[in-house]
Length: 135
Image (tube, rainbow, N blue to C red; front, side, top):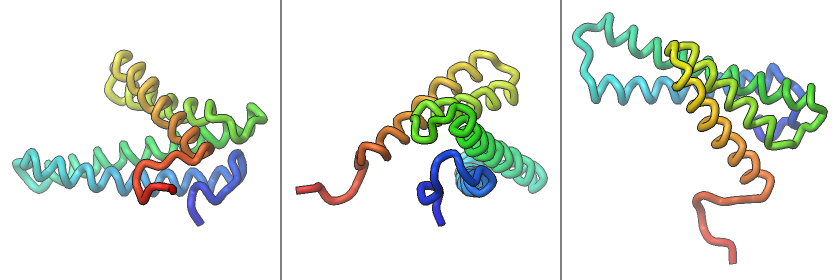
């Protein structure tokens, strides 16, 4: 069962688990690319970098999934794209707190919130990024 198969605002634990797994996978891939691009000096440094990137991305996924689901429940508007903006913004605020930078948190909040909002709108309206054209 995928993320979009579950109704919005319900089964928050399952939705959070799915977004956490996706964040973890993206963190592992990103960490691998980071280690190839910037070679670590030791195996310990490689493990630390991989762990840091992976845990950060897993936390972003968990924060997004839980915030989006809880926002849908609290606001009593399950299919509102604003829930996704709130979830993306909460993830961005986490990045700002992690880096101890208000500028990073603010820009990540706006950026991730906008991407999440547009993703939800695109899903609702049937936008397509790739694939064969509809004739």
